[in-house]
Image 1 (tube, one colour):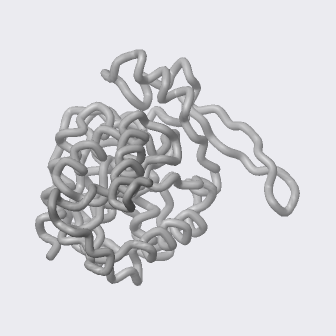
Image 2 (image 1 turned 45 degrees about the vertical axis):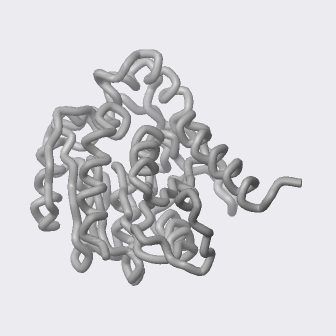
Image 3 (image 1 turned 30 degrees about the vertical axis):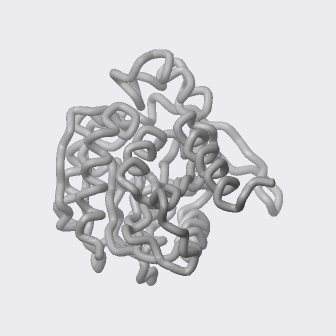
Length: 281
């Protein structure tokens, strides 16, 4: 019979492998205990847990390369699948994930995920740092669409199509998806074609209502923040990203990259997250 430690090692290896392969919904992993050191299940992690929140038109596998690098640094990493149904409900779901994590957290959001972490981290004392990756940083009363339109440059409206989905109480709602033939130019310019074809096939639509929903909390006003500006972003204008980062007082870096910067430039994204993590004690 396998020992509990060997079973755990196999489980962790499978989780990490699933994250690296980009299997949707399976993008969380926990590094095992150091060799020769007994595991203490009651002891909180020595380093903060990194929680990665994807945005619209993506899934948790978009963080795979970043997850691999963070695991090598000894961090516990979670990348839950975001429903993309509505800002308040999405934030409530992520808050439930945060509540299950022992010890301090560095909370990272990409794109619409920035709106979600700004809300989910409110009244969440375990969140010690916020990292925005080409993301929305709304103030109370602002929506993602409003911030997109603050500066010219977004071509997202022309690249998306609308489809209907059933509402739980009856009727239909509208959701947006990027047209597959435009996905690479719009979302992931410069990333290999074979990779972007997979990304386009696995993209998850977001409801129009979620992008229009106004924020009711702004955790960045109380929690230290970091921001990565994607200089060639066609979803969120880079000028809007710089403006949001400056307003939040975020420590900011800029990289020449598309909106899918965690895929195109995982080293830069990982470096910024680690900078934030090193401030957490």
